[in-house]
Length: 68
Image (cartoon, rainbow, N blue to C red; front, side):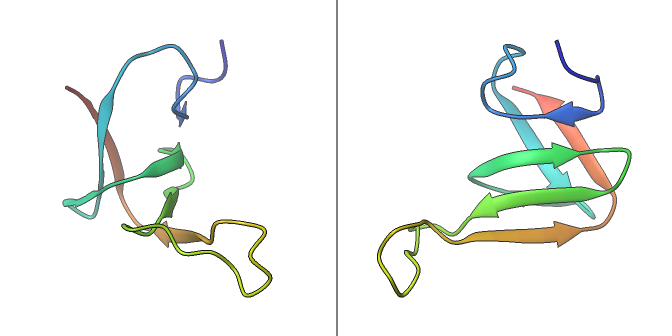
């Protein structure tokens, strides 16, 4: 198990809601509550100009992770 402040979809702790500065963020792939960092995909996902990768965006602020 990883550090308790790092959350990913495959860490085995179930589904959760992620809030950044009180606003819900969907399609989160990484959240770090200690550093205040969230990485997420757009909805619908966007592909880079070469068509090889999905674009991942980063948001910073007060991160809260709540169980569903």
